[in-house]
Image 1 (cartoon, rainbow, N blue to C red):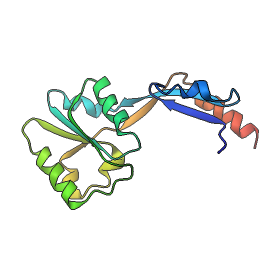
Image 2 (cartoon, one colour):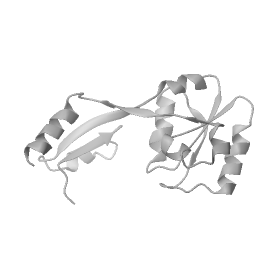
Image 3 (cartoon, helix red, strand yellow):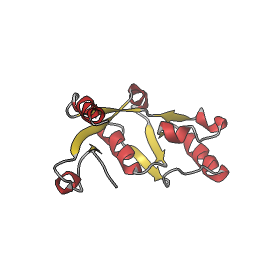
Image 4 (spheres, rainbow, N blue to C red):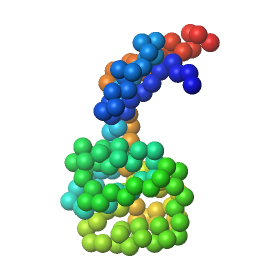
Length: 143
């Protein structure tokens, strides 16, 4: 596999950047939750996600001051079954509880369940805001 650049989102706990050739540009960023997260204050959060690393989503919630009381990790690209949806629906009906997930997971849910689930959209906050543009300029200069 060939790469001109790597984006490390969050902490580099695996020290990936130190193992890459110096010719590869390494960009650093972190996930920032949307303002939706403010509506969750004071609620018991149950978070679920079927993404590559669901722990990153759960960690982001904690770092934003909305720690899940329960985190449910599904496999990446999980196809939610009727059974999954019924279980999530039961959790969503608990008093003072907010069921939250990613946009990627929310769109896979049936409409009848979507209304009970809050979506936490995210943005990338770049360590160096100009770095992505510089990398793109570098890549397009070689085309």
